[in-house]
Image 1 (cartoon, rainbow, N blue to C red):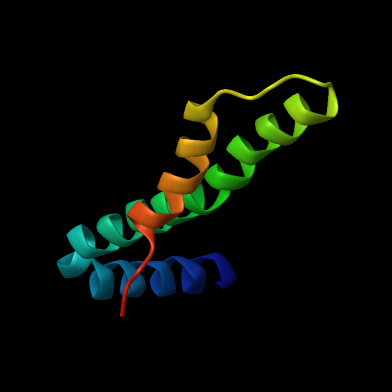
Image 2: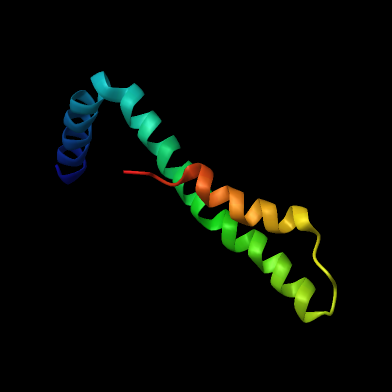
Length: 77
């Protein structure tokens, strides 16, 4: 009985969401992209900080990448 009720609920949810499948997939892709582009500047800055700590001189392209990444994907409202 309990399994049948769970199946019925899942079927009802699928029937509600099925006309909007494209939007659901697009929203999941957008959420994944947002998470990736939010974490990317910290990942690139880590390389610069590590280079400075070890006494190296980071290349200008590393600074450019860290500065350009957030400005391309930030919202200007």
